Length: 87
Image (cartoon, rainbow, N blue to C red):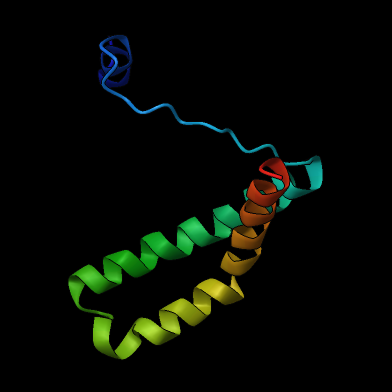
């Protein structure tokens, strides 16, 4: 039994609801954009950890790059789904 399964059986997890529902177009955008974002975040994280990037000097550019890669689009999609499902 996995840790999650054990936690669920003993009621030690929070219910992960409401589940947000996306249309097919939004799913495709989130999926494609998330792949690019995840690759960038993993690469940048390693560089911040090893000191190749400096948190003070490079953070603003990192955030700008996230936005250029579509972070704000994904955020907007999820926020709109939340708003739509909680009217």
